[in-house]
Length: 397
Image: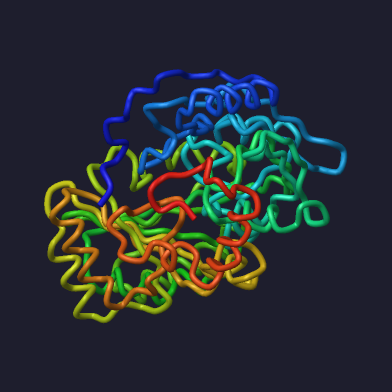
């Protein structure tokens, strides 16, 4: 069970890093004093992995963003998504990433990176082409497909803070699309939830439609890079399956970077009490769906995120992110006793896989849940690059 942004331990020291040399200094200080060291990229972690009573290496000052003529973006590990999207927009480029402006690019990427362009272009980490890392022995390495290949493999989806302190990331960007912004609201129903599970993961790659269900209300939201007429036709197909009237607002030709902030209020993990999640490889049974929807009272929410598309066209062992055959991600958000009960009710039909960026301290087998068949290779890489476990936290490799 995870307290969202639970009370953090007070660090003995915070080293505000503006260069790689500053990061090395923070690590030298930790080695000299015996204090626990954690990196903080500037975003957040629901399990407070960027907090310690020792030394925090705060990378928020390392937030420079540049784009070269080939469209490769070099981004400091302290940058947040709002700044990343704005900088890339100025060059007509973007990357598939999350919705929240305050999310840190480093943590998002290292744990995978799910977002509204992901069904078309894959995870954020699938666009990663290189990274700079300060290792446990305080050496600085550049890694890419042909340089430190095991480390580069591990950085793409195992989760942050495992193998070293990443100070810079390089991404192969994509042209920033003009998108249709999609939002629809109806009364919540079991049939609506079932129809979404059957339809959204199989929609064209250019169309991402997610669903949030709360007490009596259901909100469909997402984006489409398809023509507006095609988008409307596909959405009418969904509403017909769901048995609801077509009542969806579509805003045309919105630059992707400007569309993202409009969804920040719909982020299911913003300001919540407790959250647990799991991937699903198949539609839930009518019985389970009915039970989940009936239990929605007060501020409880179910948040469904569509997978499929480009997410699943990468082999499970091609990167450290092992969850390549899933249809959707389901988050249970609300008061603690209900979250555990709701998660347990759905778990029997889930895949047992958990998104590394949504850590869950209640998992019985976190290694299997986060990393599946990739765990043995990750454990070997951890032993090679951090044999003395300088970088450690609950559920770390």
